[in-house]
Image (cartoon, rainbow, N blue to C red; front, side, top):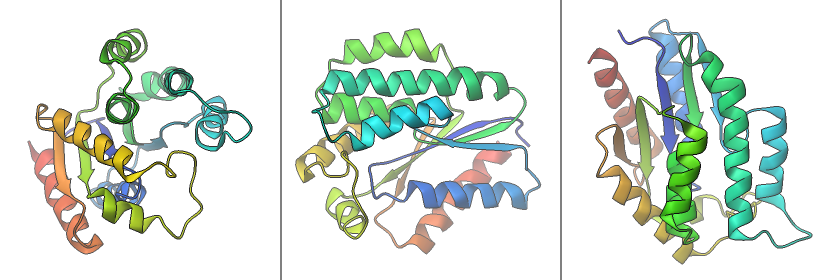
Length: 206
C-alpha cells in the first residue's frame, strides 16, 4: 500500500470536484487511511482564503487577468508553505484543484503567456507535484447547466466559450501526462463514483 500520497482532483466549474473529493476521503477511510489533509484552491489557509474572496467575488473593481494570476499564485504559495511542504511527508493530502488549474484557466481561458506560468511554477511550486491527478472531464454545456441554480462567483459567470477553452487546455495537458487520469464526468454521479473507485483502488495497489 502506498504511503503519504498527494492526490489532486481537477475539472472545470460544475464538474463535481468537491463531491468526488469527499468520496475519495470515504474510500481512503474505508481502507484505514485517516491521516488525510483535505484542502482546496485558491485558499486553504486564512490568508489564502482572503485572496480567494478577492479572486472570486471582486465587485467594486475590474480584476485584470494578470492581477488574477498573481493572486492565485500568492494564494498557492501560502498553501504550499503552510500546509503542503510541512505535511507532505507525513500525511495524505487531497486537494480540490492545484497548479493544473492555472494552466487550464489562465493559459487556456485567459490567454496568459505560458512562459509567465512556467516562471511562477518554478519559483513557487519547486517540485511539489501530485502523485496522481483525477481530471473530471465534462462538456461545458452540461457543467454550466449544473451550476445554474447556485449563486455564481466571478469565474462561474464566464461564457461557454471561456469554459470550452479551459476544457480544451485541460485535455491537452492531461493527454501528455500519465499521472493525470481522465474520467468522463458527463455520466451520472453513481457511474462517476464507480469509475473513480476503480481508478483509485488500482492506483493504490501499484
